[in-house]
Image (tube, rainbow, N blue to C red; front, top):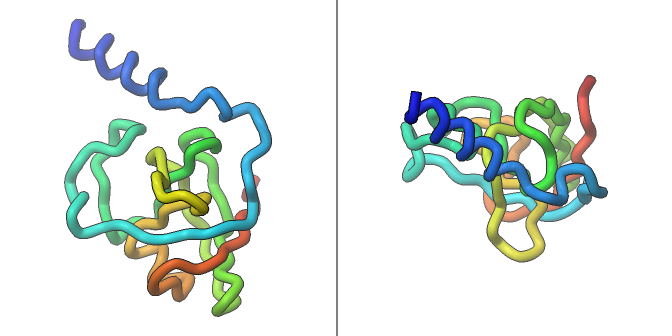
Length: 116
């Protein structure tokens, strides 16, 4: 019971206050992966670097987004399951698998579109 309450509290605390406010839909993106494999994300699921997931500071967990790399023109759909990025100027951090799918190799500018 205590463990369940602790996990529930962590999930609630990880939701940013700005979740209901405007979230930038065009901006910088980077990727993360190998060093975080198997660790718990802010949504309490295990991080899989090859999954089609991403971190956002202001979108709710489970939000599905079409991410388009404006440099390559390639796009893919990913799901928010973590919080971040913590690098100034970036709006999302992509898993390594999602970054590879859109052709992002370093830091690029991406466009986000919510998929219903």
